[in-house]
Amino acid sequence: MKTLLITGAGKGIGHATALLAAKQGHQVIALSRNIDALKGIERINPYAVDLAEPEQIENFIAQLDGTQIDVLLNNAGLLTNTPVGESNFALYERIYKVNVFGLAELTRLVLPQMTSSGHIVNISSMGGIQGSAKFPGLSIYSSSKAAVITLTELWAEEFKESGPRCNALALGAVQTQMLAEAFPGFEAPITAEDFATYVLDFCLTGQLYYNGKVLQVSSSTP
Image (cartoon, rainbow, N blue to C red; front, top):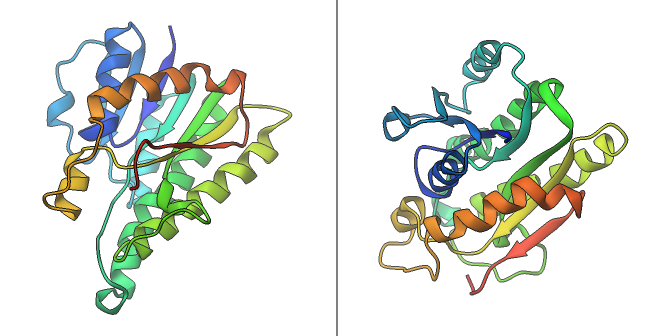
């Protein structure tokens, strides 16, 4: 059995993956700003952490008290559907703080507690893939996910001798609350619960076959 640290575990893909991992007997350390949906579930240890706040990340790491981590699933993210002309510095900062800066800071601090054979999985987006279909209103979100892809490739290079391995999943549309809020009325072809099976399997076995890779996981456009 493995110990998984999953961010954005309060809802969507992160929540579904945490529940599935716990059901399979793994230990799950689940991070979310709101942990109500995670309380009282066997083998899930929830922590209320806002990744936009460095102090909260540091306090969380202190509570881990050296716990060995096999999988870090950087799943937490914010999505905004905002035209360029309506965007501003504060909105870019808000999205990047969670999608890029918080992801990077958590990874940096968790790294000493990860097993050498472990796996860092960063959730990116098809919108962050160069040459993929692009959509109006997603410049902030997609550019932040492109940054996650580059971080993944560089971290894999840095850790290739010592481990852990690092890969990214560039997702297409998955039906989540976040997607529904950004695109009212749009229905994605796959649910978070269905997708969790693939994500968990990749977290547990993907490092055996990949390092520094970005896998495009989408059955539709978007």
